[in-house]
Image 1 (cartoon, rainbow, N blue to C red):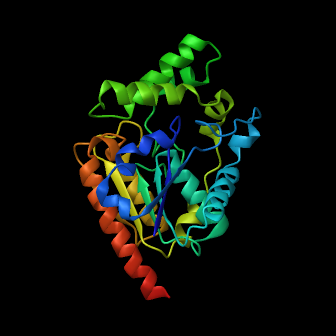
Image 2 (cartoon, rainbow, N blue to C red):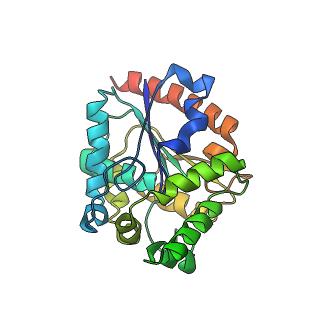
Length: 254
């Protein structure tokens, strides 16, 4: 069985190092990639390449196809949740085995996203110093417990590689959760950090359940926006258990 990890805004495949290096999870085939506009992936200069959320869904479908993954479980962090919802809306769940939202963005609206107007304005700024300071602040907001300096600096360097056009376009990105989440008949798990400063946790879970009543959820009270780093061992155990239950569900539906 395969796992495909989908990072969030200003992230890259480096976000998942505590999963990739985990012995528990190494019995699975783990696949990471960088979203368009991030890391080592292509960075188109036009806003439309990022504003239309369907492009991200198509990119994910291409990863599923190119890696010949048989019903992989998708794990999406933050904006990665939007990518998965858009994938479900466009492609349904026939080619996947399960979905895990990690502090996932369900919809981009004021009810579900915490307001940080200065940070988001800074990310869109054309002034390099203002932009880079906002990137650092944004990354800091991801953690209740900050990772060690080496990891934080690496994630910060990776975040600074992201396309400015992408950063500007993302607040207006199209989100198809209302079409996508109801299409998921495979198991869906939502994991959130109780101290998340970027996403409103309970309203997000409630909105997702409105769209799909079968969604399971867990809240890690001691984590911020990144429980897969902040409480990695608990996260890895929960992910392993989910993989087992998704495999049983897949057998039952064959």
